[in-house]
Image (cartoon, rainbow, N blue to C red; front, side, top):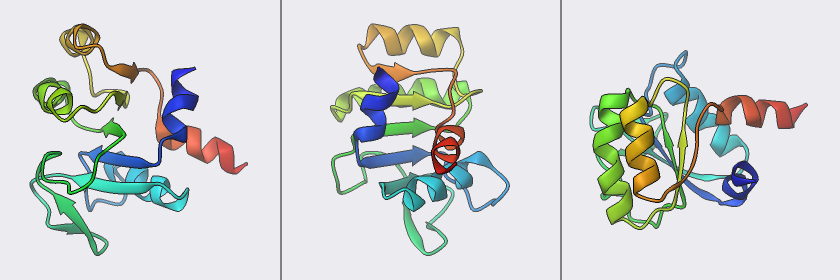
Length: 129
């Protein structure tokens, strides 16, 4: 199953990380770190989140990313897909609300291994129980 395949990957980028502690961009970033994932935040609006460097783009991360977790609106997500493909990243986890029909079609046409209609935060919380 694609979800289990993704969760075995250890180097993640959270696109849409934020300093706002009540937002999923923050919660997902922190939860991945708590579970031992090497996690990079991407958001051009921030230099850092809780002392961790945040990158303006996926291309600016100095490490090969295995999974991109998307926490941005569909319009932004659509623009990310080509960058993700150019970087040779296979896996994308689309959080609820980050995609529309156009995003789904483009992701499928580019051949990504992707996951929709699921939340990595909820999945990791469930594993703690």
